[in-house]
Image 1: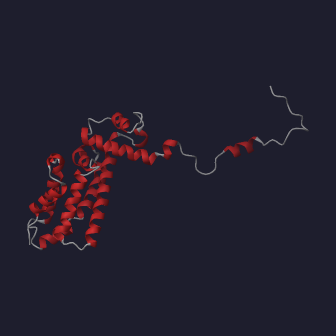
Image 2: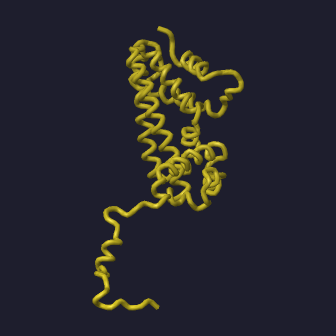
Image 3: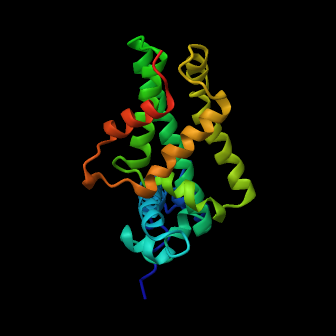
Amino acid sequence: MHAQLAPDLAPDLPSTQTLSSAKRPRGRPRKTADERDDGNRRQELIHAAAKLFHRKGFDATSTRDIAAAVGMRSGSPFYHFKSKGALLHAVMEEGMRSAIERQTRALQKAEQSKTDARWVLAILIRNQFDVLLGPGSDFIPVMLYESRALTPRQRVSLVQLQGDYEAAWTPILEALHTAGQLRADVKLARLLIFGALNWSVQWYDRRKGASLDDLTAAALALFIHEA
């Protein structure tokens, strides 16, 4: 037990109310370590999930698998995503947004060089092969083959992004159609071109010799006639 100070020798002690006020942090509460790193960990989960969903399939991949891939405990992904389905949607959304950004940059370069419509289409096709088959290309194949696992509401947002991506092709195809280099109906041609390019994720093997430039040249020769 501590000795009680005499009233005349006791220092001026702060009141309980003053202590309470002093301890209360000002402004927003401090974030925990997990909260501070939320953005980075979220991106790690998205990239790890994209690889696993692509290689193993959505149904065969567990949240435990995804957590292990980024060094998390099995339940930790649910801090960042409500469910495995929400993570799947994030993977697809990330893939489409990244594809749109890459395509926009490619088209900006084409505009600067004042390339004709045929070669702009070649740039678009080459970029599409990069998105599908190049480094870090797990995202779009997941979107192509795992969309059945999405909810109707999740599909709506992705359809909008997909529409934005494909819309950039329409004026190029229309210009080629006007020039007589594309003989098919523009809308049908766009659907058929995307169908053919997207199917390459099923059969392409870079070890068998064909490069993405080779695929681009072959696709252009298949779809477009010389003027």
